[in-house]
Amino acid sequence: MKLKSMQNMIVRTSLVCLVMLLALANAHAALFEDDEARKAILELRQKVENNRLTVEQYKSANATETSALGNSLLGLLRQIELLRSELANLRGMNEQLAKNLAELQRQQKDDSQSISDRIGKIEPLTVTVDGVAFMAEPNERRAFDAALQVFKSGNFLAAQHHFVDFIEHYPSSGYLASAFFWLGNAQYATRDYKEAIINFRALATKSPGHLRTPEAILSIANCQLELKDSRSARKTLGDLIHNYPKSEAAVAAKERLALLK
Image (tube, rainbow, N blue to C red; front, side, top):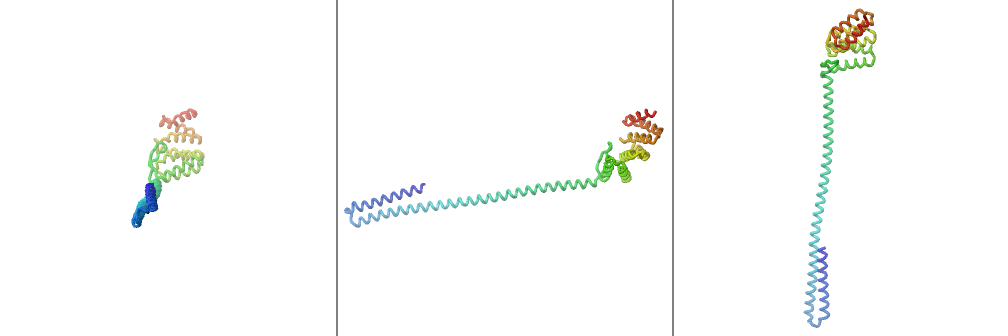
């Protein structure tokens, strides 16, 4: 706006000078000699030319400034684009780093779990069965659990084979007393009373303080009754009441003994 206003002012001044020149030439030509008239005209023309040059210089100067400003703006735009590009690259790198970190953490978790699983397969573990805590090897634990699962499924013949194998392979196992107990029950279920008595007695003899011992002795008496050996059954029940008076098996033994008398 400032440039345009300056230009208009200079143009108006030039026009006024030109009009004055023409007026002076026409109205007062008689007052001047030819040389003086030409001199006045030349001076006016010089003023017009000076004004034109001033306008051109002003336009040129402003054009240079405008060009310099335009170049500065272009430079800033280029820098902004470069910064945007670098920011996009940094975001991409950050996303990739986050993915790599997540993958590394997942891999470490998998590796830790794998190591724990491998250690669990070879190192003894503390287990508690029938109120007794002891160390057991993984294979030992799996063998006992498998035998007990077969028993619970109702396949008592197969359960007998599993428990017999277990007792042969792990004669010093902390599971041994429980293995004798469940083996005797599996044999009782298949009416193999004599073998059941042998294994129930093995439990009572090897582990008299075991949680299952009173129940095993009661089962011996039941086997004797099934074999029609009432005399031996009464003695077994009496021993049970005497040796384990506070047990639930002793309460059942008293009721059973009362019926036998």
